[in-house]
Length: 347
Ligand code: ADP
Ligand code: MG
Image (cartoon, rainbow, N blue to C red; front, side, top):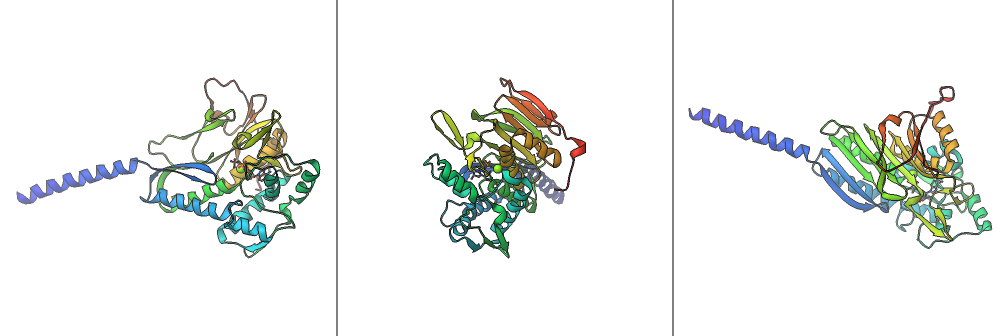
């Protein structure tokens, strides 16, 4: 009789423990912090209890190594000395960026730093360099001349690196590896507009990502529903200054060293790989609509949403049905098809 009573109590305790445990699992961990010059917000379901701390630590560590404006960073040291041996992390992001740069042609170049600095985007002391200075700056932008051997990188004369266009995407990939290692069930990591979507949400629903309105970046002109991957957006609204009614944005055309002015307001990329998503969002912005479309048709392993000045919204066919325009936005949606004859999936 006594034995039976203990058994019943044990069963109740076990039952309560299971309920408590499943409640704990359904409740996400979350954290917000400032890193890579932006606000980051993370929500993680399941996995180890210190998972958010680990993700934050990893991003902070990358920021410390990669920030060209931080005198203690490896990138700053390399920019000062022209040649330096760097850590495995820094070597990895540099190698990946140089590979992507080779694929993206002249639209993307990680040696834009002297030009970004000359316009004042690193300090906030904005200025407009004159034509001679711009010619000199453009002549120094050439990451095909960066040499590397066993983690030692050598820059061409006068060149300096800027990983601003890829660091958040690379951080998203690094966080993905940590989430996998610690068996997280799902996560939404918003790394300042570069959003990593991981696993399956507890209620089984798809992720829904807001696409920032360039005229009111706190609002969203639409929502993209997707199952995972990284969503990265580049827009002139992120950092810019105005002189005499004209806007100068922080995305530069490497061939001219000037801020891009080509009728594009924002480019959003969905891609499994975060580093590629981030590089593509910057590069397709620089390419402009026609070249961006041709690039996609030749390498259709990602999707894009491009908003132009005339309120047209170009969306690749793979995600046209997954996009919903917010109420009050009168954009004309145009689906961009993959031209089968031009398909090249070698990337
Ligand atoms: P954000 O960092 O605001 O999300 P991007 O990913 O587009 O936006 O990165 C823009 C940053 O990348 C700039 O601030 C600058 O540091 C750097 N950059 C600007 N133009 C280029 C370019 N053509 N290629 C590579 N990097 C660039
Ligand atoms: Mg980018």
